[in-house]
Image (cartoon, rainbow, N blue to C red; front, side, top):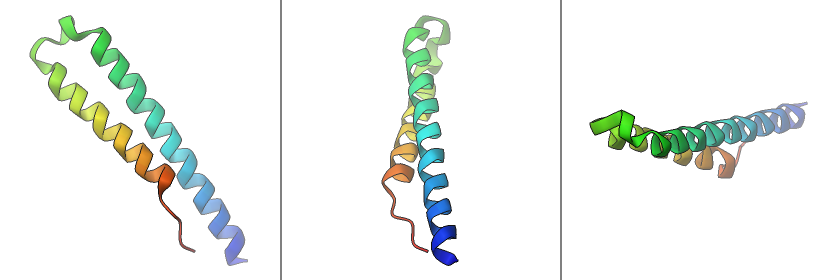
Length: 66
């Protein structure tokens, strides 16, 4: 019974990581595409995008114990 829960938890973690990775990629693209409109805040939004990308990669590559 716990193996089924472990598989479901691991699968959910990988899918959440993929969604966060895609959101970070889209945010990075729009930050790059609208750099003129952002002015001085493009570095801030670029940094937030990189954090999302790294978090998504960590969730995808993490090993779920259970």
